[in-house]
Image (cartoon, rainbow, N blue to C red; front, top):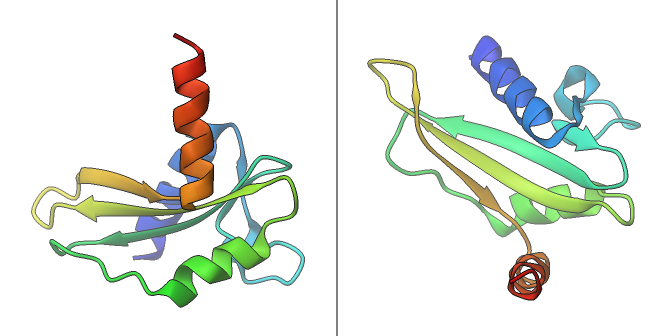
Length: 109
């Protein structure tokens, strides 16, 4: 399980140009699993199931760990039990951040 988490975090860090946090965010000065300083802070989770329960407290936790102007994200990978390959990956972000993304995309047309 720990190797799976580390691999997921490393992939996210590579994809966003950030870095993994020491101890997977268990240190007071390095919260979250992945960080692109000044831009993004990510909590990464995975499941071998067909569903993943996210509580409001999970989302509030990562939001409370960002330092302005960072944006929080909660990423969930759905892993196939037989192959170990991610079937799908989702990122949950605050609605206001999503609106910024949508409006920025619309303005670039």
